[in-house]
Amino acid sequence: MRVETRRTLRRLLRNPSAVLGFSLLIFFTLIAIFAPLICPPQSYDPYMIPIVTWDKTPQPPSEGHPFGIIDGRDIFYGVVWGTRTAFKVGLTVTLTSTLVGLVIGSIAGYFGGWLDEVLMRITDVFLSIPYILAAIVMTAFLGMGLDKVMISLIIFGWMATARLIRANILQAREEQYVLAAKALGVSDFWVITKHILPNTIFPVLIQATMRIGSLVITAAALSFLGLGAPVGYADWGALLNFARNWLLGASGEALRYWYAIVYPGTAMVLFVLAWNLVGDALRDAFDPRLRG
Amino acid sequence: MLTYIVRRLLLLPLILFGLSLIVFGMIQSLGPDRLLAAYVNPGVLDKLTPAQLEKIKQKYGLGDPMMIRYLKWLKNTLQGDLGWSLVGKQPVRDAILSRLPWTAELALYSIIPVVFVGVWLGVIAAVNRDKFLDHFVRIFAVVGWSFPDFVFGLIVLMVFYSILGWFPPGNLSLWADQVIKSPEFRRFTSLVTIDALLNGRFDVFVDALRHLVAPILTLSWLWWAYLLRITRSSMLEVLTKEYIRTARAKGLSERVVINKHARRNAMIPVVTVGGGMVIQLFAGTVIVEMVFNRTGMGSFTATAATQLDYASIMASTLFYSLILVLGNLVIDILYAVVDPRVRLG
Image (cartoon, rainbow over all chains, first blue to last red; front, side, top):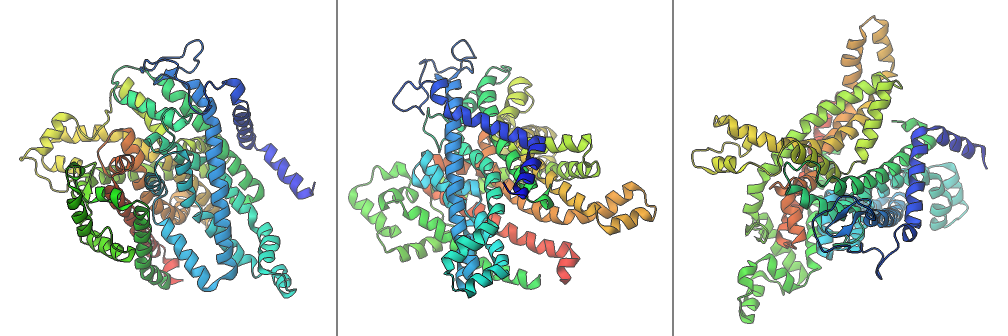
């Protein structure tokens, strides 16, 4: 291991919030992996929360249903399998949109000129629609569902990466080692992938990590609005949507449906918190100037 | 900077053109038959004969080539003819105009707590760097930033409505709604809180405010955390500057150093970020209005999306995007006005 890497690792481990973030992530990963053991699926699609009762009224936690029941469905099952949904959405969207941004940003930054101008103006246009709104509208047009939500989030999620990588490449383009490689006759593709990207990739990775949390929130928000996961799908946002309907109709009945909010809500907050802490820690460790 | 602003102004029509292409492109992914619903009241649609349907298709040019349809749509949109809203059961234009004040009120009032609390906490954290208060405020910020607005909103709803009964959901109580719809109630600004005061109806004002507190809290919460972090890091940077040391060496009191010398300079990045944040607040109303069951642009858009009311969806998208684009432009210009260094540079 290189000295620099070891030093960075040590810096990460000394940071209590980083340790908390990584521990939470490991915890959620374990839950996602062992979901079939914690909550054995009861139908052919494990992501559908099994219906345990036909009585729609929410029921508080009890034996066998530790988190209670809402809309006839076991909340515990939904929270556990929802972890898988959160990972699936967060990682797929982040990876794909970062990759798209990487390609567009690299081309714009490396070749410059009119191509850069055109690509950056397209980026501006995509940035001119508020993200949550673009996701809502695109999903509505594609025709609801979790996969449609992911597609929408990718279509409108690549711009920040593209801008970042473009700025980095504009800087790296003038460096000696790039000029040397070009002078040796290395092809453009190789110059970008072999020489420029490895030197500019870290900020992009950190940015991607910090984005996962907010992406999971946006996806859950769409499910919360009823645009994402279908009814009964193990998704934290969809569980909270059930809770909202019951809450709006219940004034003065103190704490009647607390479990319907607290359990899925806590899972979500901790999941997002984990990614945000890890993102912050990575940023601090790799670029101490940005400590904030 | 001036050239930058001129460039931005010149690019504005281009961005708006691109935006219109995206929105139009989205709706073109639907077939002509589904598109009919965007033009005709569906209650009427079912009763029409195929020949009449064909006539309507002709009238709105749904069979025309893409280019012609785009130009027609653009012309209608620019003239304010946005089609028929399924959700609002009225023309989209009227639906938006009647809902806009509610959302504007919510978003504008949310800015006040965000700016004051966010900046205040950020300065406190920076001044007490690495002490207990700093850690406390930073933990508050990172947890706050991880709280999805709808989860936070549901908790607020549970605590302040279900348990305490202080802040009910919705826009107004039934009686207050009747008051503002009565002919004696004159609409000056169409913002209910201000109109209520101008009409001397203090009870209506209080009622409107009671309905606003919880959504404002939810909408602003996320951004406190954000602004706090920006203010803190900006303050920390400024505090290391030499003019701060000079100010201290002159024997100025710590309060004057922080408030007059440091904070003013630390505000510059906060202004740019803060401006963008105000715009994002508008987009945030989509979720918040749904959580609190409020009538407004946000809930209108969300309902239109779930009920596939295409005309309303397109108009709302254009509306929110216009706010974003124009807002960013205004911020850039203001930025140059506020900071003399940028203006001269």
